[in-house]
Length: 586
Image: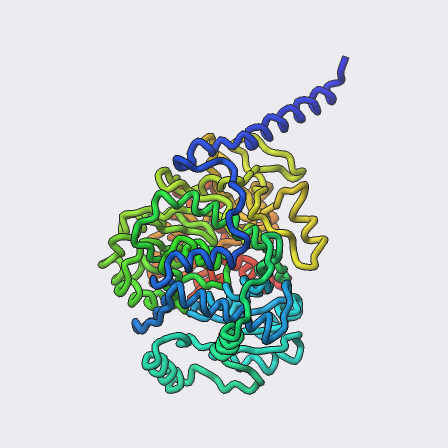
């Protein structure tokens, strides 16, 4: 006769086994668009450069990229020009600089025409791209350059004053300087540079460097003499070191391969191909150094789309000229960007008429924002989910069957499970950590074997996000595992509280964290940016009580002029927690 403990263990094992079977059966497959296969077909491209070449040949004289400045001044490149210039830059890297496949090259720039030329040219050359936030401080730049051991740096001229402090501590051998007006027609370029000089926007460059345009000219000279821009680059070669983790610790370089991004291009196309209109004009206001916008740029280029780049979406009024000049049919953004547009009268009065696909990612799109967007634009925000480590896409809502608040269903060839702390699948409907397996998952963290082993276990990438799966196979993010607040033994998720407070008519933005509390262990604290002075702490707490149980209601509400956020709109809860700890003297 078996002991009761043996029976309990047997029942537990049985339950875990059945939970695993539920996820492995992929209940989401029934929601795939017609013609979409459950598993991704073998890549038809040899590398990212192959995508660029094929799309360029197919679309030649069509406009590929346009930079639109806040005053409406534009500059554009055709597919043929992008292909020619990226071939030239690849030749410059391999021939003129003598770089080898796998050597790292860094770029620090806002969105501009130089960005896709750098990305695609480096990819063709087999060099590894290191994207650096242009707003990084000198120590942050130093870390990215030192950790990656980058040999080349392309820098926007507006931030060249950081170079004297950065270069002596780096392995950089060549600095290239670009301007937001590079590749504009001559007269427009002169006017933009004149305005920048008048406003003293470009500091004096005091280091040895070369214009990016000259590097391309040197590459073109080599090609004209009979040199080749064809280099041996395989799908399993590294494409990028994408630094991540800065909100929770020292940034780590996620090693993304050509296969990772090629796979995600194929996965995304499988979802979108039935819905792409003849006019494929996209607005890219998110920074291209972020994996979300970088991935979208490759995807849209592959389908012959016209990508309009915004150097800076802050303030949101910087987008006004672009919306007036272009008929956008595709827009990728984040919650703060959508909310900011909805607060602009010019956008509400004249919303885009043909915007058929709006993709929300980067961070959770709050339901209140999604509902307002639907009312104003008359089309939904299609919530997606991804991470730097997954190149980036993991899940998205089917365009014909979106669920409010859901991150949707996994891409083709992607397995997703919700697991407990031991890594065992939990029953459908229960919260746990979301883990991913698929061709888009990174190779690992650059020279961080321990961090890689911690995040990728038995082939599953552990995201650190708490989620649930409903009966249809749709997934819902509850919160970041590390951001969970424990109030008197009860789990409280900041996302839920932020969602409620965001609905308050007097709130512009909100961030919620847990802070130490002598009575409950931790307490909920809300940081709020109000629309005006009429909003009070009591009114916020009373509003929360209508939707939240007592222990979830913020114990304290602090008003401030802005909430610290990443460039793609994620609340920097670490900064808010640090601020709270300093206040308490901890």
